[in-house]
Every structure is written in structure tokens, then in C-alpha cells.
Image 1 (cartoon, rainbow, N blue to C red):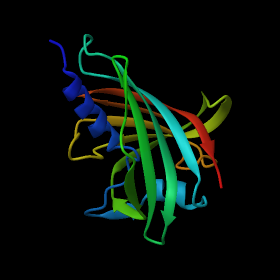
Image 2 (cartoon, helix red, strand yellow):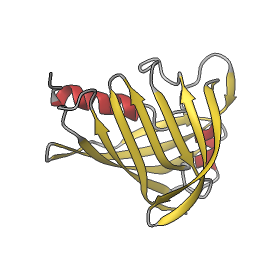
Image 3 (cartoon, rainbow, N blue to C red):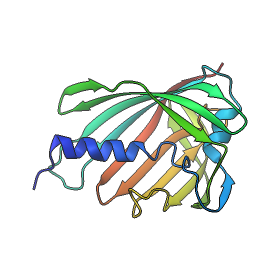
Length: 180
């Protein structure tokens, strides 16, 4: 059974909701690591990530994308990130209109486990990253798991991410970043 491009785009958009995966705020609260990862940088700092997405079966077309996240606002209770995404689905490139994403300082408590540290090669350099495993981060994808490699020197902190759910898999890697 083949997955349609529309279904694959829906998978992409639902997976994008996990970037940053700590951005929801309800119930019991904790400090939001994504807020901390952005708030230590100045307005205009950015990171660009590349990603490869695969639907739930082997005959689903692979999709690649490039996403730039740029810090455009900082307050005590949130930061705002402008997200620009270009997707390539079966050789057809599409650039999504930029969208703003608010990242609150506090978030709903999540099942986040630290897995130590690992070196990751990205953006032409080796980064020593803290590794985290996250479960139950999203009502849209309650069965999804996410593994994150995070470095404090990168705006947003994300160096690598692997996300998997019954709806597909996504691997993302830092391409470049700029600090202001």
C-alpha cells in the first residue's frame, strides 16, 4: 500500500510539531529546555536543520526538508521563533510560508530521560551533545518516541533528532547556525 503525498505532508507537519518537542504547556509544570536553549542567545540567532522523512511503509516516498529557525522575540515568559521550511517531495520543492512558534518558559511535565552524552558530526564540526529520550510529548503522537542530541553552544540547542511514530520516521541534523 502506498502513502499519498498529502498523507506524507501531514506526517511531516505533525512531526514538525515536535520541534521543539518541549513547547506545550498544561498540567504539572517544569522549566522548558527549548526556552532555555533559545533565551541565552540574542535576537537574530538561528539554526538550520536538514531532515529526511520516511512514511510508515517502504514504498512511501522519502521526503527531505530544510528548516531554518530564527529567534525573533524574547520575553521573560516565552521566546518566539520564526520557522521557514522547504520540502522536497519526489523531486518537487515547496517552500512553506514562514510561521512563528512561541516557546513558553514553562511546559507540561514530560517523560524526559537523559542518556548521557555522545559526539555528533554536524555542520562540518564534531559536537559533544547531551542525549535525551522523550516519550508522551504530544497528544497528536502519543506513541511517538524522540531522541535528541543537544549542545548549549547552538541556538535552539538541537544538533540531531530522531523521531519515530506509527506514522513515520524523521532524522534531522544541524546544517549551520549563527549567533548574534
